[in-house]
Image (cartoon, rainbow, N blue to C red; front, side):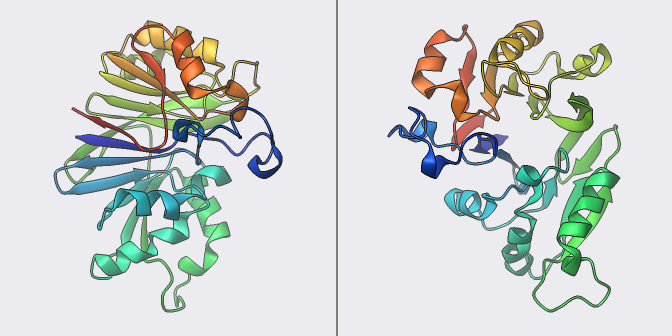
Length: 254
């Protein structure tokens, strides 16, 4: 299985064009953070987790020519706004419909934002999509099994996912003991860590480190990183063994 971290950033904070902080002015590519998304590949199956506003740019960087499905964590715009950009794969795949997997409230949000793709008599050329409701139980896509992991993003329920020995949890600041059991024993954990300062709906770096120690994966990467976090190399130097900041374009194979 191959995992490509397409984006590790967040929409929060000062716009990059006006910000003169060390991160936004850094020349290190690992400090350039598009909105969070992950590509999961196993044999002939390619699945995307979330479709943020940077999706087109992210997919072009991968060079992939087929996509089987998009799985959603939650309904916030920085995770859904790029859904329209799946339409080239409809045609690359012979006008095959794209499967979207999400909770009902996420699908409702997509239907409001991209209403033209859900009409009975849709305009020619709109994304061809098929919706699939996700509950808190495993589901299959191709050769991949997705185990939802329910976390809270302040008061909003969000799904993280376990696929084989890989776990992806973004936009969270609480996970119950019951759901935590689904995470334990994984080899690679990608976990939300917004910044060092307290935040109402995201794990801080210290909180994420504490949780990562408890899970004790072979390797933990932190994602959904605000520019307030600091420079990639400097933060990595502070982190415990087996923990690093993720970066856009990071690939993991196992």
